[in-house]
Amino acid sequence: MMHLSEIKELLSCNVFCGEEFLNMEIQFACASDLMSDVLAYSRAGAVLMTGLANIQTIHTAFIAEIEAIVFVRGRKPDDRMIEAAILKKLPLLGCNYSMYEACGILYAQGLVSTMEVLDANLKDG
Image (cartoon, rainbow, N blue to C red):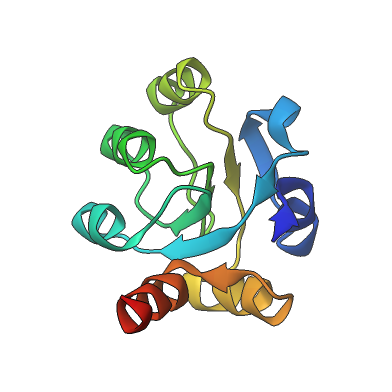
Protein backbone atom coordinates (compact mmCIF):
# COMPACT_ATOMS: atom_id res chain seq x y z
CA MET A 1 0.00 0.00 0.00
CA MET A 2 1.11 3.57 -0.57
CA HIS A 3 -0.37 7.02 -0.53
CA LEU A 4 -1.28 8.73 -3.78
CA SER A 5 1.16 11.48 -2.82
CA GLU A 6 3.97 8.88 -2.91
CA ILE A 7 2.93 7.81 -6.39
CA LYS A 8 2.91 11.46 -7.43
CA GLU A 9 6.47 11.91 -6.16
CA LEU A 10 7.84 8.60 -7.47
CA LEU A 11 6.53 9.26 -10.98
CA SER A 12 7.03 13.06 -10.96
CA CYS A 13 3.34 13.48 -11.76
CA ASN A 14 1.35 16.55 -12.61
CA VAL A 15 -2.00 16.68 -10.81
CA PHE A 16 -4.83 17.61 -13.17
CA CYS A 17 -7.52 17.38 -10.48
CA GLY A 18 -8.05 15.85 -7.06
CA GLU A 19 -5.14 17.42 -5.20
CA GLU A 20 -7.25 17.14 -2.04
CA PHE A 21 -7.14 13.33 -2.34
CA LEU A 22 -3.36 12.91 -2.38
CA ASN A 23 -3.44 11.50 1.17
CA MET A 24 -5.62 8.53 0.10
CA GLU A 25 -4.18 5.04 0.38
CA ILE A 26 -3.76 3.05 -2.81
CA GLN A 27 -3.74 -0.72 -2.30
CA PHE A 28 -3.06 -1.99 -5.82
CA ALA A 29 -2.09 -0.95 -9.32
CA CYS A 30 -3.51 -2.02 -12.64
CA ALA A 31 -2.34 -0.99 -16.07
CA SER A 32 -4.16 -1.13 -19.37
CA ASP A 33 -5.28 0.84 -22.37
CA LEU A 34 -8.15 -1.64 -22.83
CA MET A 35 -11.07 -0.62 -20.67
CA SER A 36 -12.59 -4.11 -20.96
CA ASP A 37 -9.45 -5.43 -19.20
CA VAL A 38 -9.82 -2.79 -16.50
CA LEU A 39 -13.35 -4.02 -15.82
CA ALA A 40 -12.25 -7.67 -15.86
CA TYR A 41 -8.99 -7.52 -13.93
CA SER A 42 -8.94 -4.47 -11.67
CA ARG A 43 -10.33 -4.18 -8.20
CA ALA A 44 -11.47 -1.50 -5.81
CA GLY A 45 -8.62 0.41 -4.20
CA ALA A 46 -6.39 0.46 -7.28
CA VAL A 47 -4.68 3.17 -9.23
CA LEU A 48 -5.15 2.81 -12.98
CA MET A 49 -2.10 3.38 -15.16
CA THR A 50 -3.17 4.13 -18.73
CA GLY A 51 -2.35 6.01 -21.87
CA LEU A 52 -5.98 6.16 -22.94
CA ALA A 53 -7.07 9.74 -22.38
CA ASN A 54 -10.77 9.84 -23.22
CA ILE A 55 -14.03 10.20 -21.32
CA GLN A 56 -14.63 6.43 -21.38
CA THR A 57 -11.57 6.00 -19.15
CA ILE A 58 -13.23 8.14 -16.47
CA HIS A 59 -16.51 6.24 -16.67
CA THR A 60 -14.80 2.84 -16.61
CA ALA A 61 -12.62 3.79 -13.65
CA PHE A 62 -15.67 4.94 -11.71
CA ILE A 63 -17.56 1.69 -12.41
CA ALA A 64 -14.49 -0.39 -11.47
CA GLU A 65 -14.09 1.58 -8.20
CA ILE A 66 -10.62 2.77 -9.21
CA GLU A 67 -9.23 5.27 -6.68
CA ALA A 68 -7.14 7.37 -9.10
CA ILE A 69 -5.87 7.46 -12.67
CA VAL A 70 -2.30 8.12 -13.76
CA PHE A 71 -1.94 8.92 -17.45
CA VAL A 72 1.40 7.73 -18.82
CA ARG A 73 3.44 8.76 -21.88
CA GLY A 74 2.68 12.45 -21.31
CA ARG A 75 -1.02 12.03 -22.03
CA LYS A 76 -3.30 14.73 -20.66
CA PRO A 77 -7.03 14.72 -19.98
CA ASP A 78 -9.18 17.31 -21.74
CA ASP A 79 -11.52 19.69 -19.90
CA ARG A 80 -14.51 17.37 -20.27
CA MET A 81 -12.57 14.53 -18.64
CA ILE A 82 -11.41 16.75 -15.80
CA GLU A 83 -14.97 17.96 -15.16
CA ALA A 84 -16.27 14.37 -15.04
CA ALA A 85 -13.44 13.30 -12.73
CA ILE A 86 -14.14 16.19 -10.35
CA LEU A 87 -17.81 15.18 -10.17
CA LYS A 88 -16.83 11.58 -9.46
CA LYS A 89 -14.10 12.61 -6.95
CA LEU A 90 -11.52 10.78 -9.06
CA PRO A 91 -7.98 12.20 -8.95
CA LEU A 92 -6.23 12.50 -12.31
CA LEU A 93 -2.45 12.59 -12.51
CA GLY A 94 -0.03 12.37 -15.40
CA CYS A 95 3.59 11.41 -15.92
CA ASN A 96 6.03 11.24 -18.80
CA TYR A 97 7.15 7.66 -18.14
CA SER A 98 6.08 4.82 -20.41
CA MET A 99 3.54 2.47 -18.88
CA TYR A 100 6.28 -0.16 -18.49
CA GLU A 101 8.59 2.23 -16.64
CA ALA A 102 5.85 3.69 -14.43
CA CYS A 103 4.59 0.27 -13.39
CA GLY A 104 8.12 -0.93 -12.75
CA ILE A 105 8.83 2.01 -10.46
CA LEU A 106 5.67 1.40 -8.42
CA TYR A 107 6.22 -2.36 -8.32
CA ALA A 108 9.81 -1.90 -7.13
CA GLN A 109 8.47 0.24 -4.27
CA GLY A 110 6.07 -2.52 -3.19
CA LEU A 111 2.75 -1.60 -4.79
CA VAL A 112 0.99 -4.88 -5.60
CA SER A 113 -0.64 -5.63 -8.94
CA THR A 114 -4.36 -6.37 -8.96
CA MET A 115 -3.48 -9.51 -10.96
CA GLU A 116 -1.38 -10.86 -8.07
CA VAL A 117 -4.35 -10.47 -5.75
CA LEU A 118 -6.78 -12.00 -8.25
CA ASP A 119 -4.43 -14.94 -8.86
CA ALA A 120 -4.02 -15.52 -5.12
CA ASN A 121 -7.80 -15.47 -4.64
CA LEU A 122 -8.29 -18.02 -7.43
CA LYS A 123 -5.70 -20.36 -5.89
CA ASP A 124 -7.31 -20.05 -2.46
CA GLY A 125 -10.85 -20.34 -3.79
